Image 1: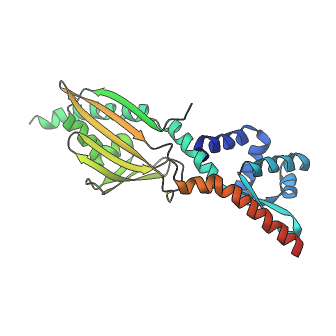
Image 2: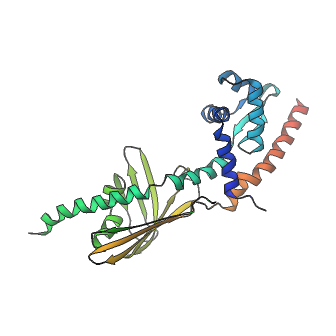
Image 3: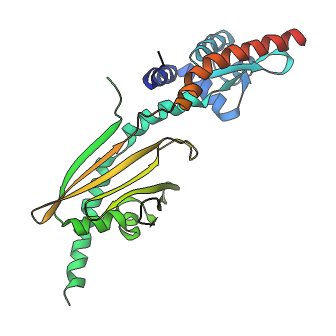
Length: 120
Length: 144
C-alpha cells in the first residue's frame, strides 16, 4: 500500500513536537550536515540524547546518515518530507477570509471614487 | 480526518459582477486589494505576478480560465514550497449576479496533491535510499 501524505506529514509534525529534535533539525537546516558530536557541541543536549533522536529522525526519513570525515557518520536533512508537511501548513495558512474582506473593502472604497469620476 | 485539499468561500458583494471582475482580473485591481503590485496577461496560459512588498514575496500565477464576467481561474505554487516544486493549487473565482450585487465563490484546490515522484522522494525513496546509504556507509567504513 502506498504511503499517504498524511503519514509522511505526521512524522514531520511528531518530530517537530519535541524541542530537542526541533533544535537538531534547526541546526542541520542552519549549518548543513553534522555528526552527533558536532551537534552535541552546539546544542545543550547530551550526546546520548542526540544519538537517540538522530536514530529516530533517520527512521522517520527526516534525516539521512552519510559517511563523514574520520569515519564519523554525518546526518543530513531530507527536504522531501518537509515539503509534504508544508502543503498541509499552506492550506491552514491560506487566508481567504482576510483576502475576500480586502476585496470588499477595495470595491467599497473604489465605488466612492467611481461615483465622483463617473458623474460628469 | 484529512487535512483540507479544498478551500471554499462564498461572499455576497454589493457591487455588480463587472466591477468585481475588474478587481479580480486587472493589474490595478489585484495590485490594490490582493498584493501591492501586480501584472497580468489576461488569457488562458498568460502569466500574472503579484508582489507583497512588505514581505518581499512575489507569487507567479498562470491564468487558466477567462470567461468574462463569470469565471476566472489561475494556478499558483503552494505557499512556502520552492518555486521549482511542480505542485500547484488551482484557484477559481465564480461570479453570479444576485440582484444588483454579486455572489463570489472562490475555490482553491490541490493542497493534498502529491505526485508519484513526490511520494518516491518523500517516502519510498527514503526506505530504499536509507538501505543504500547504509550499504555505502558500510562499504566506506570497510574500505577505510
